[in-house]
Each structure stands twice: as C-alpha cells, then as structure tokens.
Length: 388
Image (cartoon, rainbow, N blue to C red; front, side, top):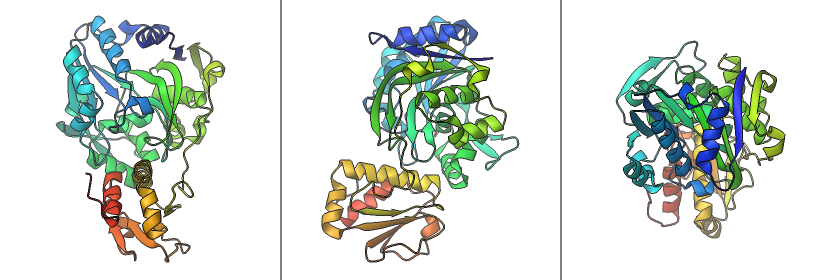
C-alpha cells in the first residue's frame, strides 16, 4: 500500500515538516545512501518568485539539501530546464538559486542544455523517444519538488507534470504539439523519481501556472509514486484527479494508483487541509480586456499556454489597456481550425504555424511560439520596443 504523508508547517519551520513527512513514509535512509549522487528537481519554469506561488520555494530546496547531505549524499545537484523562450541560467539567477548554490555548496545544472542521450519510450501514446540529460541518468536518487498549482493546459501541475522540465526545449515543443497530457504520461514511463516532496507552502489557483493567484497552504506532501502523490494533491486542491487527464492516463498506463482506498495517508487528514482551488479558464474568453481570443478546440496546449502567459504579463504591465485605447479590440486566433465567428472587424493576429496560411494583419510563427515572442510582437504594434 502506497504511503503518502501530509504535514502542516508549524511556526514557519519548513525543514521540520519535510523531515517529519519523510519519516512517515519510511525515513531518509530508505531513499539516500552513503555516497549517493542526488538530483533535486524543483519547478522553476519561469523567473517569477515563489512569493507568487509560481516556483519552488528555495527554502524547501535548501532543507532537502541539508537532509540529503546528512544522509550521506556525496554530490548534490539542483537541475531544471525552464520553459520555451527563457534561459535557465537567467532563471536560476533571478530566483536566488545561484546565491543559494554558492552558500550551501551544491551545483546548478541547466537540463535544457546538458549532454543528452536518446531514450525510447515503451508503448508510447504520442511520443516514442525523448532526449534525457546526462545529469539525470547519472543520478542515484532523483528528488522531485513540485508545487500545488493549477495549469491552463493541464488543470493541475504537480509531480508528473514537473518532470517535463527534465527534457530539453525541443522535446517540450514536440510534447505540446503532439498532446501535452498524453506526452506527460509517456515521459513518466522512463523518467523515474525516487522521492517526491511537494512544496505546498504557497500554491497558485486560477490562471496558473504563472499568472494565477497565490494560495497559502503551509503544507508539505511526501511520497514515492507520482500518480498517488498527484491524486492526493488534487484532492487537497478539491480537484477530482480523474478529471486531470495526465493523472488518469498515468494510472491507466500502470504507473500508479489514484484510488485513495489503496493508499495510506499519514499525518494530516485531507479533509482537514483541503481548499477549493479556482480552476484555470480553458478558452480565455472574457478574461483579458482588449483581447478576443479564438483558441477553441483545435489549438494545442503549447499555443494556449503561450497566449495565456503573454496576455497575463501584458495585463499586469498595463499593455492591454493600451491595446484597448488604440485598437478597441484585437482578435487572437490559434489552432488548426479558424472559427467562422472570428470578428474580422478587429485587428487580427494569427498565432502558430497552424495559422500560417490564414488571413491576419499580423502572424506570429513557430510551434508553439513562446509567450515572450507573442508579447513582444503585440508590444511592437503599440510602438513599444521588444523586451526579450
């Protein structure tokens, strides 16, 4: 029976909660032995601070480093490959991980640019092979440190989804184009994790994974099986794990169980810590002033996610207000199909290679284009210089 630990952080003592959670699932010696090389994989998908519930809290990672070192780990590496359009080294610096690494004596590795080995995926749903970083392959222990977050393309991003950060940006693009939920199932067939420590200090609801609303939970969730851990986390977020396609798909593929009756929940009770997280809007209609998005149905998760990232950052910077003042509205169109309902009276922007042959005043190519390139091209319409 799979053990999952839920611990409340008391008096701000993150390290104590992590150690207690690990003890409840068998103790640190179950996972780390003398001389082991340990890879810690946080969620650092972008350069936005943990204070917004976007990225893994560095205090959680630091506590894990000290516990791993105490257990005898010889070499500890923090590894991440950030989202398409960003440089991992810049993200490490912006989030304070460079200072952290120097202070506590660990290495940082950009998993996007590491030396790679092609690994075939058995019984693939959509992707039959991926490039896997040398750092991952040479690690004795992989500690996955995701957050409690909603996700515009996947409903929730937890431990299964966080493993997408292991593969390079070229494979991330393929994953989105072929189907992100089935792709997450595929990569988790070969990307194994030995210990999962979910950073539930501050999560995010709504327009996740980057532009939602922070949610203070003050929790640590620990386990070893990503399907079971994600099922418990989804329940804590008041989300049915069967409605999260990649969690359900991973269970169907035999990667773990999402049936709580087949788990032993240790520590806090789910009922005592759960909170209803606001789910992300899938179609983006009516979310952003000045923008009429047409991403219904045929747009892949890559384009939908990139558009969401771009528009949220533009909203926060006051740029959508400028669009409304200059154009009234802009129509954004993405996907294989162009809806007949597209308002052609608006200035029309087509996004992604699927829309390359469609009529629009501005086309933003790539598969998918990054949210940063979308923002820059629309900023240019306003006479503003590119930021990225």
